[in-house]
Image 1 (tube, rainbow, N blue to C red):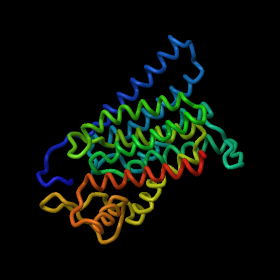
Image 2 (image 1 turned 90 degrees about the vertical axis):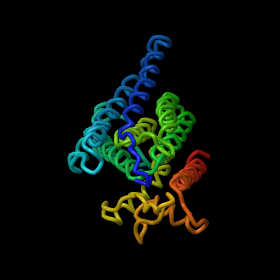
Image 3 (image 1 turned 120 degrees about the horizontal axis):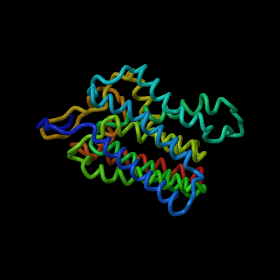
Image 4 (image 1 turned 180 degrees about the vertical axis):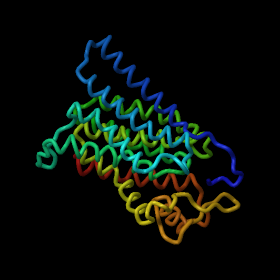
Length: 290
């Protein structure tokens, strides 16, 4: 979308990320089972894998049908909600938040909404080389540190399995991209973020880390979910605002960068968004962990 030569780039590369993180998690399970003779968290791990696979199904179908077509919105929402069932049946997480005991509302309502929110909104902030993979690396690295500090090191290992897979993928996805992640990667990363927040009982800080995506969702709703994140491309490859108004953090990044330099390029937009995400995470640690 942002290349004047209209080069062909492979789509749906996120299936390799899903394959990589699955192997990493299963290797961790094998080490725990055969070496340390520990099976204490296996139920949670396999429930987590089920959530990843079910939510990723939406991405696989979307990638196969094409990003302009994909599944019907209602069907997509139903499948993502269904992906929360493995967490519901094991009664994952703690029903008490902010001093309020939600009881059965927590597994039956809040968990599905959390999975749906994180999975779908992570897909909103996308469309620029390296953006989705870079964001996943940053957020999951932060959550790995949070879960380690709160005594859930097994979740740290799982988060870092995804980070490792994303770093390997990022090498080929950074500007200029040789492969695109597709919805399969964005859905699986978003789902994993939600699951780690639920199983680690760190929903508050995870939601705070998700502030860029909350803002992105608001801007997308401003455009009635019809305005795309892509920019207008000049002959020299620099980017321009595609609309008069801002309908995404990507547009806002272009607008901010244009105030300091004449020409704005795709990698700079990605770096600015990553920088904003890192600042949000830093503030989150100051507010919730210190």
